[in-house]
Length: 326
Picture 1 (cartoon, one colour):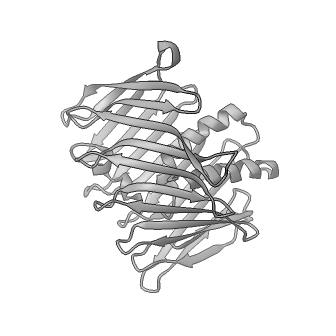
Picture 2 (picture 1 turned 180 degrees about the vertical axis):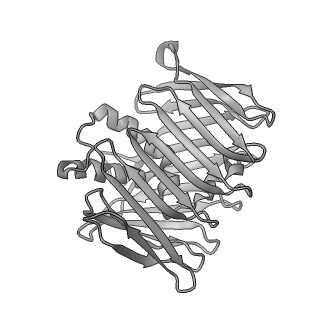
Picture 3 (picture 1 turned 135 degrees about the vertical axis):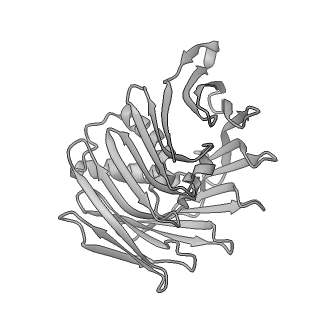
């Protein structure tokens, strides 16, 4: 699925905690919460996928937005700060939830600097230099124990083909090999562990507008482990996502396990999400309400209610935003 690499990333980090990575303090419940956060932020931190999905127009910000800071008052507070250039392209993204991550981007929406800081004080700073003429890139690490520099290959559009991953102690975790279609869109990602063994392939397909319609992941044996299908409305908004998983009894088959539907209001904002879990026959929905609009019609406060099994209604954490303009 689209965020499969985020799941693998977390599994690697959790495994690395036994070697002092710093995640060992977290309980299983906390890991699940972190997983949700990673899924949200994964696109921002990935060197391979296009960061232009984070540009101002893709985030439904109106007006000459310069800086947006959102705060979610959950049990584990989440703070996210976007910085945009005047042309609307993403300049940097900072996320905080126990750990802090700061990614800076060039004018092609490629990550050029990364900072990662954990609660135990471990910090890694890296910078990336792109040589488009020779189709190469080099990541320079500014931390003892890390390789001084790691180089890889760029395609004709300046996108990374091979990416190598290390944990906060500098230990090599594995690599990702990516390929792109004729339109320059991500077509396939292959994942290898630290021993060079291939363990996952994810394939992407698109509609005529260049929007992802399916993501299929294959396991070590070449069998489909999971599949995600997306449906869009006439305005190009995703209105439904179906998730299929490999069955235990017959690994060569996948079954529909969940479906999510997204409902939008007249102003284009999402107002409701419906979720169906087929394995447990459960249905739930979350309703969003936006308040405190500024002169550019950007909301500064979002309320949400969750309605689950037995019609029990639960208020969800409130998200507030502060917005600066050019």
